[in-house]
Length: 110
Image (tube, rainbow, N blue to C red):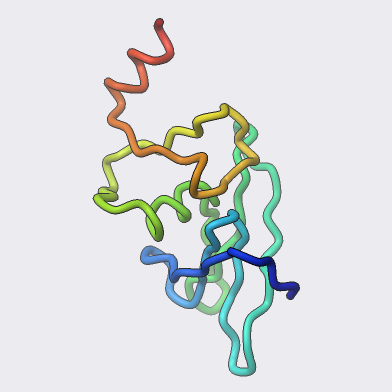
């Protein structure tokens, strides 16, 4: 896995054994290091990845939400992730805001 200058990694609180970077990349921890987890475009155009939660069981997680969980202070599960530039594939921490549903509706209906 290539290193990128300025990239910071933090664990994803909701999925054990996975880390997300400030640039929106995902990796899984193995015995002898880390391996990048491929992300793909899921329903609604959001960037997602499949996380193994136990033997034979996977869950699909949105990359932007995992970045928010790891990097945004004050993250709460009921908060919504708002991508500032509207690009659902740009999951960098500097492109993410946490909003309530009512605040998002006000932005959309302007």
